[in-house]
Amino acid sequence: MNERETIDGVPVTEEQIAAWAAEAEAGYDVAALKKRGRGRPGRGAEPSQVVALRLTLDEIAAIDARAEREGKSRSEVIREALQLPAA
Image (cartoon, rainbow, N blue to C red; front, side):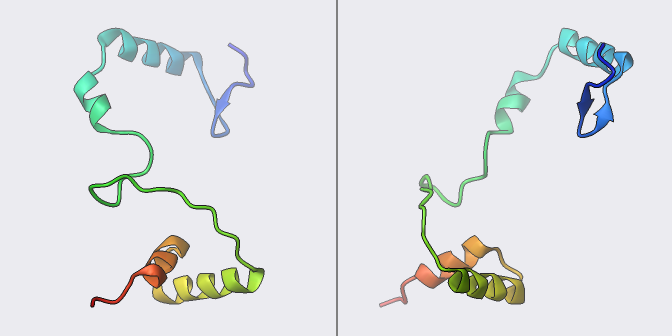
C-alpha cells in the first residue's frame, strides 16, 4: 500500500482495506443502496431545471445580504422573488 494514499487527508491503512474487502465479500443490501438515491433531493413531483443567470456583483451582494438576513440560501431567495402573487 502506498503510504501517501489518503481519504480526506487521513491515511488509508491495510486494516481499513481489509475491513472494506470483508464488507464487500459479505454483500450489500441492494435495496438500501438504491433507496439512497443520487444527487440532490427533488423539490417536488416534477424534475427541476438548472438555469444559468448573469448578475452583477451588486445584484449578487443584495441577494446574499437578504439570504443572510433571512437565514435562507441564495437559491431560495431567487425562487421566492420569482413567485407570482395569487390572482
